[in-house]
Length: 260
Image (cartoon, helix red, strand yellow):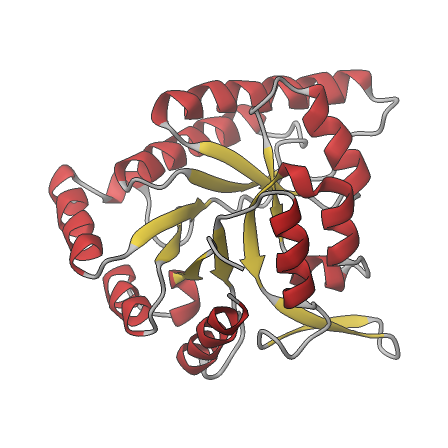
C-alpha cells in the first residue's frame, strides 16, 4: 500500500501550535491538521505570523494536510447558518494561507427526503462554500451522522467536485456502524480519513476511543478498500483523552507505516 500520507492533529498534543509542529516532526509525520476554531484563527495570524509558520513547516519538512473547522451546528441546521458560512470562509482563507487543500467541516444530519426546502437550502449553502473554496484551492470535506448511502446520494445530487466526505472509523463505531460498510457505500466520495479507532461495549451501550490498532477498526482492510477507490491521500491521526498522547500518536505513526 503506497501513496498514503500521515498527519497528526496538533490539538491532540495539548501544546501550542508551534511546539506541536516540532512534536509531529519528531514522530516522523508527513503533516498536521490544525483546528481553525479552537487553536488558530485567521484574525490571529498576521502576514508576518503566516511567513514564520510557513518557514517552520518548511524547516521541519511538514505540510498542513488539512484544516479542521468543527462547528457545533452543521450546515444542515438553519439557525445562524449565514454566520456559520462566513466563519467557514474565513477558515478556508486560513487553509489557503497555509497551503492546506482540505477543510474538514460538519455537515450535520441530512434533511429528510420530504423536506424539500431544507435540502435545497443545504445544497445552496454547500455550493456557495464550494465556489468560494475553489477560488482559494480549498476543498470542503464533511462529516455527518447520516448513513453512507444517503450521503452518497446527496453528494451525487450536487455538481461534480462540490463536496467530499470524511471517513472517521471511531465515530462510525461509536454509532454502531461499520467503517468497511461506509467505504463500500460511499468510498468514491471520501477525500480525507481520520486514523482513529474505538470499541463499542454492548453491555453498557457506550463507545470508547482507543489507541490505533487496538479497537474494532481493521485498518489493513480499510486501507485496502480505500485503495480500490483510488484513495491516496491523508490519514490524520486523532487521539483524544489520552494520558500519553505523544507516545500513542508515535505508536500510531509506526503502526500505519507498517501497513504501507
